[in-house]
Image (cartoon, rainbow over all chains, first blue to last red):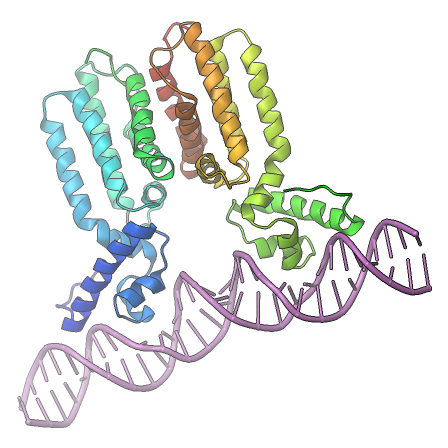
Length: 189
Length: 189
DNA sequence: GACAAACCTGAGGTTGCCTCGGAATACTGT
DNA sequence: ACAGTATTCCGAGGCAACCTCAGGTTTGTC
């Protein structure tokens, strides 16, 4: 897949950019379930063109998130090198929540992607879990963990909090994270 | 609203029951976003009849949940009288999560209902928050709370966990609850 | 058994998903 | 400059679901 034989035609590149720009705007305003026909219309392109570029909603979302994901993973790598193990873990959780706040409904797509290998976001989810795992391991070695936990637990917490932020408020989500992190981390640390 | 002038006609009662029964089955199997036309079809009734009885999806859901809600609130009242304040709070959280597991998608409807006064489920959400508040207050008086929290926090945790149970697994949801409760409650208690 | 009130029906307008054959367009080489 | 071809685009059309409403049907009552 993605056989990049040669450079795409100029109109194709133009349309792709236009579609991505409009999709970003619409998803921001209306969430990940916004009408794809509406996006195509706004981009000044026929619906078939949208589907030619992005075979489904997830693919479009995946393309939109690509850069943003790279930045997120870079942040994760940085955090692995920063001193405070516990603080790094907390910072990671907040970073992912902020990441998922881009579009309403994104938390659900991510949660689905972690199990579904066919999802365009599967790889990203696996990587997030992996970073969570490593941050957890480091915190455990530093004696900062009060109880056992895995990258999957962290992933679940992040997604749950992102969902709460969507449904209720960022504030409420913050309180949920505080509660959970208080249960996870050693107080003093 | 609900001006119960007099008893509805026999066919109306029959259809209502039939619709509720089929809706329950379909929502259980397919979640709260299942097709209403499909439900009407299964109930042997025209789509217009469904809408005559239940003006929207939430109203249908509200009618379905009514008995179940009463049972839940009764359980909440019982828990307020049981000895261990901390254990009662934990039990309440688990009871609501089990309640929300009835239909996939219910967590989102509940989360929406707490803010939306027009929702048929608003009252139920308020009552849940209220019970959470009282259980929290009792636990605080018993010295079982490690930190401040409100009924809204408990409501958010319950809904987040219910959502995790839908998206990932009941297991994962359980671990999230453990984490959060560990952050909330005094260890020994 | 006839009348009114209550109830039911289902076609139809609307929106959104997605596909596919045919038209249009951009590149390539001469 | 231009023909030839591969690439890309278009948008009608089939499908499913939402919801409404004018008109027909059933029930209960006197």
